[in-house]
Image 1 (tube, rainbow, N blue to C red):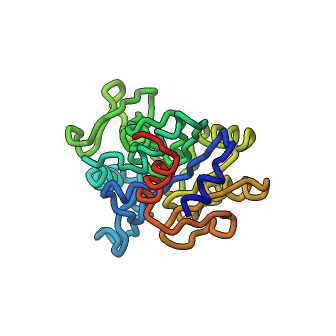
Image 2: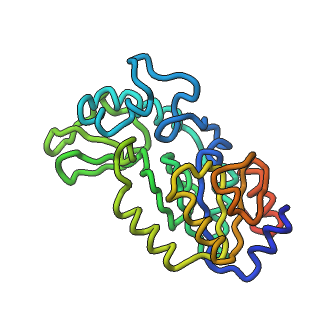
Length: 250
């Protein structure tokens, strides 16, 4: 399988990696339901689904409740390190023009050294005031009060992540549209079910243009029909094999 992927990359210049929870799973992060992942088999005890708790309307009505579960997401991410898959994607920048489109909010691509990242659902480490222009990047939430407030105007602060029933960040959407207009020689879909149309779109567009598309996942996903190479393996293990085949030093 790795030989087919190496052949697909021959002569390539621009490469897109679309990544999801399956990549961060190899850093020890669970692939749960929710923003960045919570509650695979059970909902919160408040009588609401996790999607309701982690929604824009609930945050507007009861920000302390939403913050309670956002903190649990951050705690699940805390201490996680980029795995070999993240590092391979970053190392490939030395050979290709690499763009990363990620649904993950854990910031691990950034920490691994990738430079062109479209974090379409945001980053849990970025905080912003809901009223003024105050912004802050934090390593973790350990020092934050239960309901953080802006030091400038005392309004509620929130993580810069997309909650359910909220629109995607306009800057991220514009960046994705720009990259798709420019086009890619190869698109990788790594560890994602591609349930959202904007996550499946790059693979579909590139496949329609007759260019290679590679799916790395343990099973079939929403974009499997548009993948010209279907690599059934854990994300980190497959990418490590690719780095070895390409003689990429990590």
